[in-house]
Length: 129
Image (cartoon, rainbow, N blue to C red):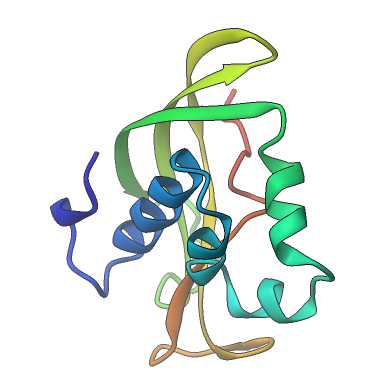
């Protein structure tokens, strides 16, 4: 899935840019697409990204769609998306569904409709059963 499938203000665009950087192992670029709070409150965030994706080698993002099932969140500033990734997990290549969360913030712990979408990398590999 190419990021050009989405407009720049769309959280799916942000995720597509993030996962493209992860696929290429461009850790600083991936960090640019992360949630503001996570970036600014995590010690050594680039090293953390490397650790998160250590056991998952991502090859391809097959699709991305926005999830509207979470009724208890403000979807103007918090968004779950559904993705299908082709990943190699401990030597085995598989296709798996994941549900990363994106948060739109102006600053640390300041969700705002006028903010910037960012991927919460802790949720980036949340498997859907």
